[in-house]
Length: 258
Image (cartoon, rainbow, N blue to C red; front, top):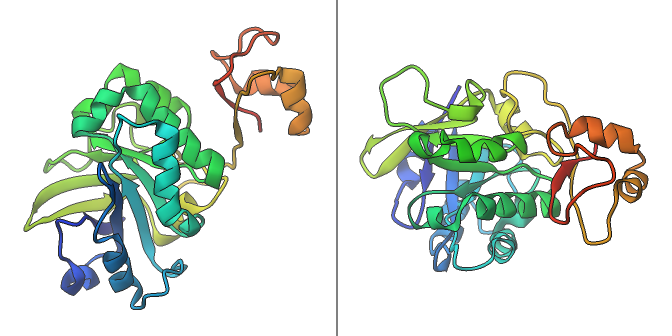
């Protein structure tokens, strides 16, 4: 496993980064861009170019303003860090005031990031919150887990994800820093960053590439199957419990097509 930290404008960390294998940097808070996003990343990079870092394990997270649309918040997040897709992990910080947005808001944000980048972002939250039944839809749509469970146990309570959690924030007791474990190697970390990879497969195991699509107005399964060079029956088989009638789909459904 890798050991890392997550930071925002409230943290100063540069002198201690050598002690960690990865870092998650807050890109957005409810007021927009985190005021230390650029300075934190520049310190990590050792320069001010803003270019992605293929040789480091890092990522960005968004604490959203759920009074705005999930699409707009995801688009703003990507306007700051989207060029890191393929090199960085992305995550939605789902706690505090964000919870009032509801699970569908969170899913819409995750879907939007995936649609624009091909990267499966993680959802971050407390073990007690994300283990609730209503979050099974996040797991079932193949989004991975960054779980906050401050315990001395050997593993976190990862709810629907079981042993397939990605990041475990296990303490907030190290000064001002939250410390985390990543459930795999550096190679596994980079798989989570790559477009088309799954975020819910345990990092130590092979990752299956999957393709998802959000149903648009006027779509039917025949049209979607043709678009992705597959068959209606194949799409139905990939979506058990969601598509029960091949002649009935709804606008906004998020379905697997490959």
